[in-house]
Image (cartoon, rainbow, N blue to C red; front, side, top):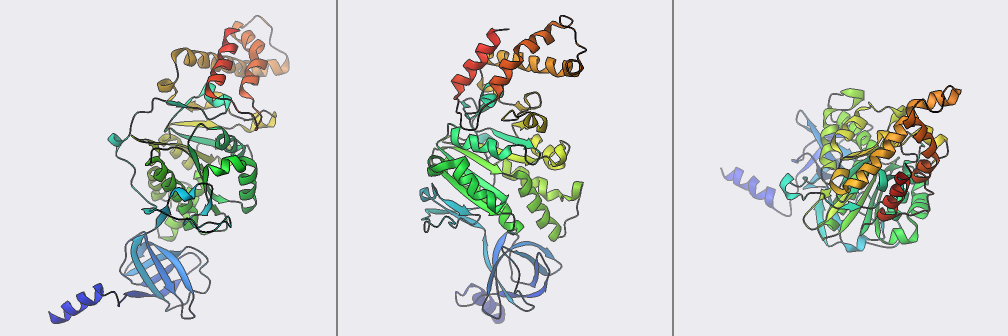
Length: 435
């Protein structure tokens, strides 16, 4: 009994630290015998040569701890000591983050010195309870006429931007970051190409946009944990500002790379792969992340998530899973982009589920009328291409042909143009009056 009391006292002593030892390591994770810890805890691997490697506990195998380093595992040796922190990953947040570019851990990478934090928030937080949310009844202008007029977004809504590679997702989110009527913008660049980070900051945000934005960056060469943490950090930052009464625009580019990072971690932890190699936990983590945005009593997070459709495949499990959770989807078309029309939004395949709640009845009728014209033209396009259509045989198609130049003008916008919600609705009204 005295011996047990001694060990209990030793565990709580500030001068004694329990540690484990590395017993196995491979390219992605480290196995250690101990220390006592929980999944998600941060830990530190101390090399015999004085090196330090930060890691995170991702699972257990038999009596061993599985931990994944946050950076390269080069230099980790058999027998290195592993110390647990007993706490999960957290982010230091504060008003000083505005205008700064940070990594996934909240450390500045823009060369402007340290960021003074006000409080620590856990990265992986629970989503608000359903009854803690408020109804989304107020529209928000994103400054893109095709979206404001044809698929109006509600404040606090979550929208997916779906498209293949090189079809214009980054260009569209750049327009939104500059033009959306929000108090501030939080951007998460997940697994981004290093070359494009500077281009996004200079071309998409610019000096004015950057001054009211917080940007979290993880590049494609970083570990899957850092890529996942980038998405979590951006969401946590948005939550911090929303809790202080701000209306936040959250841009996450991309949800697909977040899911791919979660897949790497899940497979390393020994989870069985399912559809396209994604373990079941990936879809649970994705839902947990997406549910953290929304409309709250004192602030809101209006979120746009880019989703890569590999080979323009809409049946991809990540595409399908995201679309089932989000409040709407914007589909970008390679064919429309090939015609030189930007933004290349496929109106007929895109939808805002909350437009009926925030748009007037006349606005909805006008948008539906334009959709009918687009649908009629799509049905007769093959006949028109081969010259087989005879004018007068389909009155709706005749009308669609006559109005098509004006419809395309409504849906086309240069990247530097900005249109507010009222002007977009007025342009739609002017078009439908001509019917």
